[in-house]
Length: 473
Image 1 (cartoon, rainbow, N blue to C red):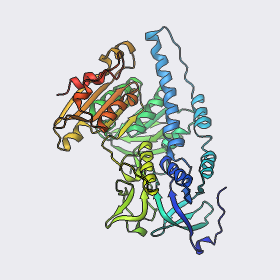
Image 2 (cartoon, helix red, strand yellow; image 1 turned 90 degrees about the vertical axis):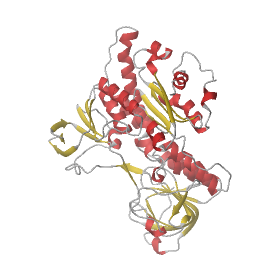
Image 3 (cartoon, rainbow, N blue to C red; image 1 turned 90 degrees about the horizontal axis):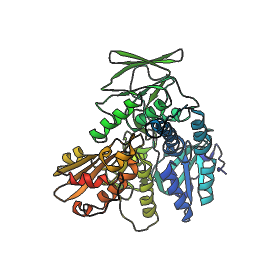
Image 4 (cartoon, rainbow, N blue to C red; image 1 turned 135 degrees about the horizontal axis):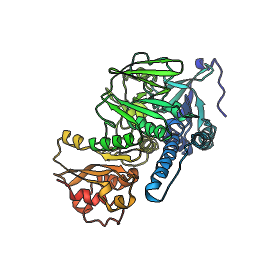
């Protein structure tokens, strides 16, 4: 049960806790659970759903949508490989799976119960720092409660950003949250933003028959990945019927009579829906950073390698941060990684400090785009002596036998002075799985000469790693 509060509680002495966890995305939920199970008195607070963006609007439901879209694409490829196939797309099974299987109707009752069963106290509300070791929680009914804590962990996450486009504010545009709740597909869709979210959802809706135009302000898709990866993905999206426009400066948006009008350069687009996937905004607007001597306008929170928050005078006593707001990567796996580091530090246990030199990421389009560590340009900018090697995935034996859908590449980036890989990219079927082997190589600084002595199973996609290593130059 959620703890009852009086509207007068804000004038009473603060309730003492060992830890208050603010924001219950995957990392915050895991940390609150672990601390409670270790016998700490824990207050866990979230203003929305316990579990955060990932299980309700991100990783889990979006991958259900992508799986459905991939099944359609694979069925349409069957006529090349196995005979005539007729495919009729239906969004109803997708919407049902997302609502019933992934999100339980966007209800976090089960997640709250898990935390409570672990021994934590759970509150839905807005938490704000009120000074060192102090947190004020305001619940949806307006009641407030001030609590004291030996340690406070900030994990407020991010929310969809809205670019400063004239007329956009006030229109019923979609963010990823709205798209994930769609019960039917529109006839036409304009996607604003060519990052991972924009690319994934553009492909999903295109494969379900939606006329999709993808607008990317920059000169290429996926600006954080290798240019070669972006080019391959753009070709794949175009093949799915997506119109991709790069260098697109969106000047104005209007909405009338159920139709969006989007002015891009000298062109005017019309669509049933507009999906804005133009980045994320850290939820640091009103966390109360100023009450503990930190910059209230900061977009990230500085942390040391054990997740302690640091300020102008060093570590801020009793204050920790994990997740997107640390600026180390807005990925669930980063939040969970940091959660484990903070857990060990808070419980006085030994453990390795945080290290991000082998951070992996995956965009789950078809083909998947996966990377780990540095891109070639990042390595050069870091002053390394760089060698790169690459090979087209479709030229591998597995790519040849796979046929349609096997387009991709494996690219490796070597620090030639040390003889180790510092980065790698995989584009292709199961690229996110293949990159795992390369993540081990980057993480452990396995010498390239050792990697060349390995036996790579034949015929597999990952065998192309051996070919890419042989192309290092």
